[in-house]
Amino acid sequence: MDYKNVQSAPGSPAVFESSQQYLRSANIAIQLTLFLKNLGYDSRAHIDGDYEVICPLVARDAGLGEIGRMGLLMTPHLGPRVRIAVVTTNAPLVPGEYQPDRNMIEFCRVCKKCADCCPGNSIPTDDMLEIDGVSRWRIDSDSCYRYWCTSGTDCGRCMAVCPFSHRNNLFHNTIRVLIRYSRLFARLAYHADDLFYGRKPKSKPPSEWMRI
Image (tube, rainbow, N blue to C red; front, side, top):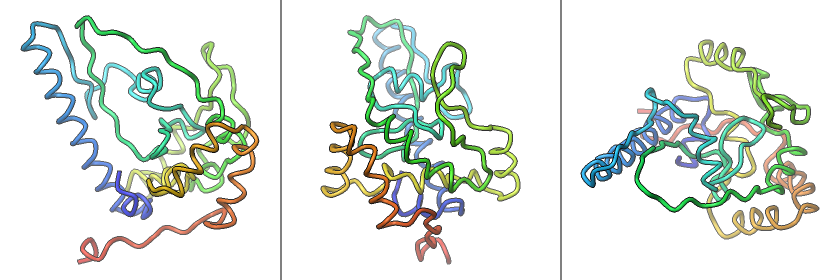
């Protein structure tokens, strides 16, 4: 998802960007599904509005990232600034092996910026809980949706303020790598993010062409 559009959350440019990327991921998933079907394999695209799997969990198990405090997939270079589709198939694929990124989870454990900035107070500030046999954070989906209805958008403020959502450039990528390979750095890096960007950064105005 485009950095500038996400930074406007909970404004309408973030909703526009979310819709655009859901559409792009759906196009890719459907093309891949048709390709596999043409090879003779059963396949199904799981896209926005038509899921039979929980996409962030599938993406996590595929090694694309971790599930963060906000309940979204946290990717190494874009944080939660992604939209996901999944293709399931009976094609004989070689499975990969999920390797937990414990330092990314450690960063989420101490950062809590998404929780502090959530306008619906929907993101927990406490530690992970054992839920259905899995240690994870669980957002208050009811209060999250109530805020969506109040604001008239699907918010996205948590994505905008997440330190992992910063621009995909050399400086921020270096910080992300240091977080992934140093638990101590993971526990300290969020202080630097607060120093440079503020604990509760304000939403950015939309691009000029969106204000016309």
